Length: 394
View (tube, rainbow, N blue to C red):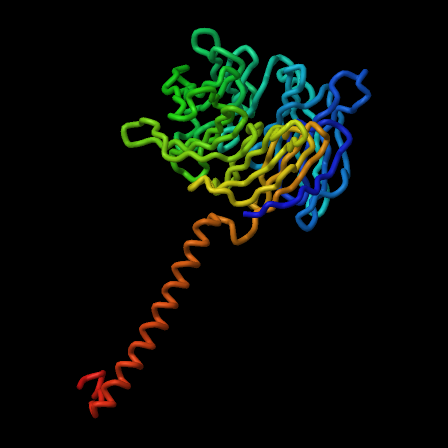
């Protein structure tokens, strides 16, 4: 696991969300909110070259500061939740060897988007047909993304008790199941078509006192796994839940991920990795580290790569490169940072690699010892005038 010194780049405004479309450019977004702040509200298009973030090559102004961003699975469309709780949508034109072009929604589509309010989080289904939105009022709304028609609206008695912090669709259940975390620290699962809550997760022993569920992601490899971050007493933890044949969700594995609280979370497109970044960590009054970014093996929850103090203040969002080569993190200090995933670390944790090397070393030593023993035995037999026959027969 690498522990690298941060080399972050800054982009002129507090950054709250990020996405990585196909190609060598990333999208980072944020701003100052009101015009009186003097800080622009924008989506910045940033080039990535040789594993490093470059300059801002272009930007698109937004009405308000973007706080959340969802990129269509095909990378062709982008939806933003703004500071006012409203939505903006852009078509993403991917161009070979050139920055992507963002085309804003217009006409009736723009009018329909203006009808949604108090949106706090966004998530596309695995095939991009559906868009889920979590609201400040505890509502979950599921749209047909092509037409923006409301398919389900969970609110009131059929909704959640507090503001929705995160939502995600389950590919293993054909996107018919949603997970949601709330500001009250709860995590629930919903059969959204039936507007029915089907499960509520309990914090495991050791985390139940002062612990709170924070973010959630379903597996992307076809399994029934659900990954959730939990913050307890200023520390960030990763949990992996698995659904058994009876449909029950059982805690399969848990691990402490960070010395600070996790503030952002995502899963790589292949499902092999989890990415998380943190808030400030105060070890003593004179020492405060902030914005760690880490990559973890999704099967074992073991750390694969980590950047200490990637940002000066808390991280706000993370996003993976589509080929699982790096994790992008952004922060309210206007910085963005890449944490690379080493080729040897892909699909295998450092602990597993060390154990594998030890096994190979022991096997080699055993072979050398056995060879030496055979030579000594032959020399002893010859001393007594006994010579081995064919295939070692006496």
